Each structure stands twice: as C-alpha cells, then as structure tokens.
Length: 396
Image (cartoon, rainbow, N blue to C red):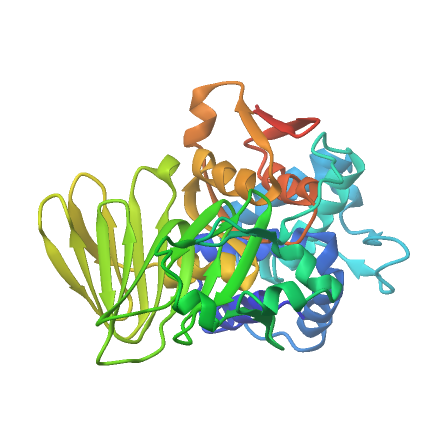
C-alpha cells in the first residue's frame, strides 16, 4: 500500500487531517494506480464503519453528488441503483446513496470522478519518462566522465581516478596517490543535467544526494582544518562527523558551517533565494553580504532573499524529492512547473500569467510519466495542459 495514503488515513482516523491533507488524500485515491489501496479502504469502510460523524459537511456532500450526477448524466432517481466502479478492476459492487455519501469515506466518490475524467481523455497524455540516475564528472585535471557508463562494468578507468560504486548506489570518491601529490589544485565538478539525479560519497564519508540541474564542486582531497564544497541547485547532505575539521557549504552569497548533521540546500538561481532546511544536528548559516549569522535547530529553515531570515522548516516538503515524490503544500503552479521542468527535462509555457499564481496541494510520485503527473494537476479542474514535443503549455 502507498505509505503516504496509510499516513494520511491514520491522521484522518485521529481527526487531525488538515484541509490540504484531505485534498491530497482524495487526489491519491482518485489515481487509478492506487486501485488496490482504494479497494482495501473501501472494504474497510463497508466491513467496519468507524464513526457516525460525516467525513464531509452536508453542503459539501450535496455539491459532490451534484458533480458526479452531472458528469455522468445520471438522474437523481437513479442514485439508489447499483453502480460498478472500474469494470475488470474492482470485483465488488457498491451501492451509492445519498445517505452513504454523507457518512462514507470520500474515496468512493473521488475514485468514481477519476473514472469519469479518464474517459474524457485529457490532453496531457505523454510518454515522456521521469529523470534517472545520471551525471557528468569533470576532474580537476580536465578529464570528463559520463557516470552512467560506470554501470556497464567498465570500472577500471574510474578506479584509477579514485572512484567506485558502493552497494547502495553511491559513487564513492577516495583520491589516489597521484591526485594527492598533484600540483593541480582545481576542484572536481559533478553536474546532474535536467532529468538527472545522483548521489556521491566524498572522501571524508559525507553523503550527498543531488537533485536535477545541480552542480557540486569539491576538492581532490580535504586538506587543512576545513572541508569546503560548493553547491548550485539542490542537494541533501549527511555530513560525516569530524570535530577537528568543520564542513562548509558555499552557495552563492551563503555559507553553511557544520560538524556532522543532515540538511537540505535549495539554491536554484531561478528561484531567487537560497533555502536551508535542517533535519538533524545544528548548523550556522551566514550571509556574506550583510554578515548576518543564524544558528539553526532541527526543524528550522533559513531563507536568503533580500537578507537572511529564519522560519519553521517544512521538513517533508524540503526532502520529498530525495524520497522520490513531489509534495506541494499550497504551492503556486509557476513554482511547481519549474520543479517538473527540471526533473522531466522539458520547457513550460503559460497561456496567461495568472495561471502561474494558481495554488495546488498534494503528493505525486516522481517516477511516473510526465502525462500522469500533469493529469493529476488537471483533476483539480483549475488548469489544463497541452504537450508539444518537450514543451508543456498550461492553459485554462
């Protein structure tokens, strides 16, 4: 079962589900790929009713019923009739009545709406696949590698340059003697293109997950009392502890200093800000322009944009990309489509500027085809998409 559905369902039972999370649960259960989850929850509802309190207010239920009837041209007299959902996939027959609508879980209704919408064949149909593990490494001496090639078993040339692959998929870098003794002091540069992601283990054991369209610069070896790297784009760090040698991350006008901790940095130039989210340990974040310095505690987030400020961190949202999904918390479509564009290596156009400011909430699997992701957004009814080659056009 989809673990996100399990989590949201648990919160719903405890009556702690926010309005935004409830919309997310409905969207997830409306997705045909979650058919088995829907069947399990439906069986649970009919077999063990858990509450006499309606999931929705009466006016909300009436509006949903009206939506269903209008979409499928069903007269009110036919509501009491037996309706089969998703032929060949759902083996049971469900009786939908006005009373059931008031007390049953919203999954029944929204899954039905999803079935109706699917029959309309939305324009956002595309076989453009999601991003994958790929990156390019340029060594300090100018040697360039496509890291996808390391999967082909030709590892000799990588080992000779200090690289190998760990069992859990990290590119592990341990400088060899000729690199340490080399007079070349330039940085190694690891780049993930649009549509790519990668993870690397640095010489000190620090693990770095890189999101699409990101660049990591790191030295041949960490010498002296500082371990310094540079990031542009987005990366998640699990820094190896070393109290004698601080780990520092530079991103534009920001410097983060740590000794051993877990944090995420989002510093895409097009976002116009640098967001640092701390999950574990402590970090010091400094603005090189103003000199302002903040200490972050777990759960906090700093934002560098026209100054450095501190706010409560959106932890799940910050690391969703690393865990394999998009999480949108009342996020503007313009921001959403920038994330989608980087991951699917596409361009985006908007028929009108107002669309960029329309807000959405929900969770989407990052490893679905592009068309599936866009269709989930289309289910809200606030936007439609047209795909021309590798360009997505948003309109309403």
